[in-house]
Length: 453
Ligand code: ATP
Image (cartoon, rainbow, N blue to C red; front, top):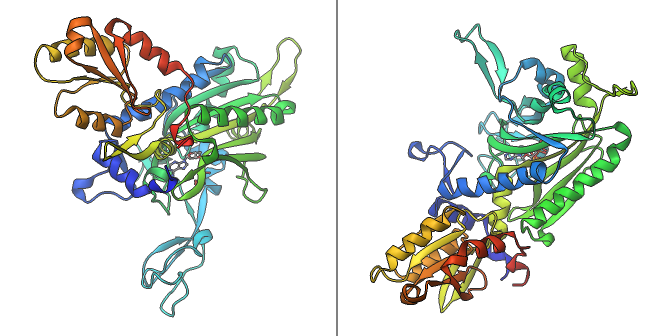
């Protein structure tokens, strides 16, 4: 299959048609770049997060979990540098009232004459560049005017630094160790768009890994490798994935080294995840602003130091989009066009569909029995409505890897056919072996069939 069948429009349309993602507040005309995740979207997103937790927590012994507050003490954002530095330079046009990011003005279109760039027509009346802070503000307290200004977090990482001391005490950990968290972050982005790629409200999966300063470079390399492996194991095609180191001008205020994991989206190569060596910037600043000691002390040797931090920070929504794009495929079965999501089975929203061939002769009853047994193990769907081919197509579109069909033979010998989404092979399995067989397939190595297409 040629890659060019995947466009953002097709993904957006499938996402809406099949209940993965809806534009938010649609009955009110929508709210710019806000989205709601529907049923299958929730299932897919949960699976992405579950795989991340698995890699961070279950498969390691050196990382602990956290779920910190979205609204933190405002001083935290002074200390982190976000209040002063988390800004985009903006230019307004007094004529067309549009707002542009100064660093993207070359690519922007004039509001009156889209064939030109802002500033190119005689009518354009541009302001100079002004810094615009990306943090959303709100107030806490019952009286609006007197309440103190607080911010919705623009990253989850700071919640981890604020808890560093708690984790040293309760976790009985010594560097190297990590704290991982998944949660919503908010940024008042100026240039949104491209579906869920850049929104103002999004979810992040971030892990701060605290290491002895001398070992930071080694751990940075370790996490680059781990994270690229994670993406490829979950099926992203390696030829659509790359690591891109930042040059010194691009580095964030806190970073000593950063590499982005980039994916080849329909909009071109774009960031999926950033992996940074944040040095001791954050802990040092929070120690300074809070007056607390934020350092590791080895009680046996008396050695003390402020650990360096290696941070892999990924976006859940961008991961979701990358997996959808990478999985999207179209082919033809018996002269009929089919849309299929070739998702890694562990990510697929529904693992198994149970389908009686006909709605009579005891087939629905046996199918229900099989369904009840399988749903104990996997996200399973029962569907008896419409021609069998149509039901297969519906499951293909949401990426269900296996469809179990109950036919007249099933009633005689308690076997069923198991249809594979990708190979379309149909095998006969005993009902009693279904759960175990599917479990085994779920655990097997998986490779995107699009690589061979
Ligand atoms: P970008 O350069 O695209 O604005 P960033 O470098 O500011 O991203 P980070 O601060 O490194 O992003 O955040 C880590 C991850 O969080 C990103 O790799 C991305 O997956 C996700 N992310 C950041 N901003 C957004 C957003 N506005 N919408 C969706 N996901 C986002």
